[in-house]
Amino acid sequence: MNHDVERYLQAGTRANTRRSYRQAIEHFEVSWGGFLPATSDAVVRYLVDHAGTLASSTLKLRLAALAQWHVSQGFPDPTKTPLVRQVLKGIRTLHPKPERQAEPLQLRELEHCVAWLECTGAAARAEGDLPKLLRCWRDRAMLLVGFWRAFRSDELCRLQVEHIQVRPGEGMQLFLPWSKGDRDNQGQTYPAPALARLCPVQAYSDWISVAGIARGPVFRGIDRWGHLCEQGLHPHSVIPLLRTVLKEAGLPAELYSSHSLRRGFATWATRSGWDQKALMDYVGWRDAKSALRYVESSGIFPGQLSRSTPILAVDALPGLASPDAGSGN
Image 1: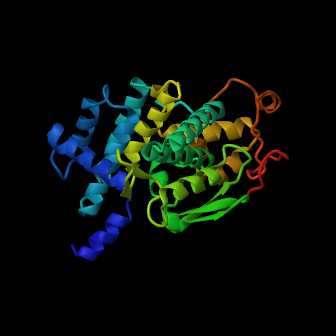
Image 2 (image 1 turned 90 degrees about the vertical axis):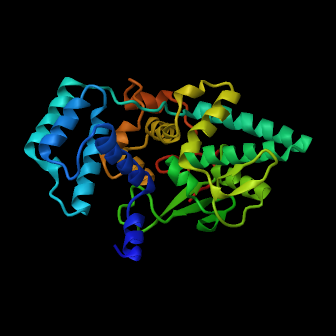
Image 3 (image 1 turned 90 degrees about the horizontal axis):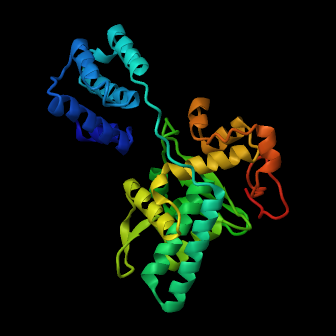
């Protein structure tokens, strides 16, 4: 295959998806001992052999990888036969498994973490401890931008300074050339609000100022001497970073993952009175079912929530207004 063609094909698929598909194909061929190209009977045996050990969502991903391999190689897709679909349906019926979801990082936990980071960062500045100050300001910016924009970990790690426009006291625009929801890879601009407290704009500005970053990745690794890496953080490093902050702030870190910021924002917005369309538009969800998966159920009716749940009023965000909040986009 022409090198340029291969390069553009690679660019048309997310790195995480390519990695997951490679692992799925390796599992089918090496771990299970299957042959490619595969028959639908072989796919059915593969599903049956792993029905009790793998979640149906994992099996669906394995089928997607097999389908992609066959189509890309010019072979008939063995995963689309009625027999395969019926067996997968039977596995979901006989082996139901509750979907594991990250604990949402609620507003009070976010505020607690930010307060701890600010206190620790101020002490580090007074002591001349640059590495600690850098980590505190980076982690505070990552938490606040990640929460208020409901970003995935890979989106946080792909933010570039030259793609961000800041308007002090108003907000900022964050451009991503592509994301999971941007299926046509046209790029999308995400507004983030300037707030009276827990402000992502101020946290971002503080971080790039103290780090001296003018171009390149926003969020980077920091070595023990306070030197910044040239490359951005790897998405897999977001979870340990988040859990380290939570643990040091005295919170149960093991409950949370990188999706906790996204779930936390969705839960906060829902309990603050946002309707489903406003939430989907802001976050970028196209499917209502996907959106609902991120909202933590409270067992309280929406009317009760709007009256009884403390709300951080943010007039920069849809459906909310308060004189205490900073003006937004």
